[in-house]
Amino acid sequence: MPRLVLVLHEHAMLYEVAIAAEVFGVDRSALSPTGAWYDVVVACPERSPRHWLPHLPAIGVSEIGEAAADLIVVPSTDSPGEEIDPALAAALRDAHASGVRIARSSSPRRACWMTGSRPPTGCTPTTWPAAIRA
Image 1: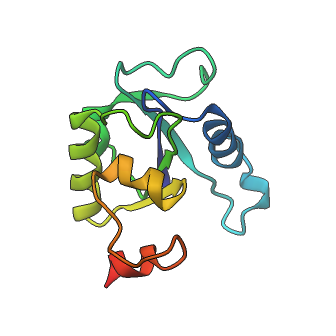
Image 2 (image 1 turned 45 degrees about the horizontal axis):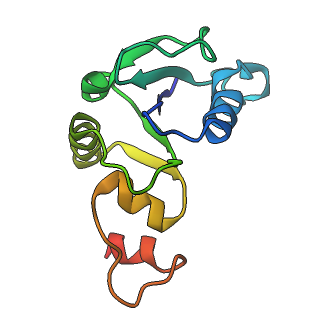
């Protein structure tokens, strides 16, 4: 069963959190050809999934690397000018470096907030992901 970590950071857009929780957090194993669905855990700074995701187990942000995730979902932020939690940034960078896939539900500008990076000059929202892979 694939393990998915849903990052519930301080400025997460709740609509995007809800979409990921609905798609991956509800058991739909009957629809899967293998009969397996996703094992979802929520990563929060305070290790508590808050009252709107009480049915999903929680881990601390610093535990993302130990979660054996196959996929990490990072919802976009409602405050792109705010500083990112350094522990979250480090955990995401380490997970990415170890080969974990990271899905973001945001525009490239908001993704800059999460990664602390800037899109290459001349890139558009459509071409920026390709530039990162290059």
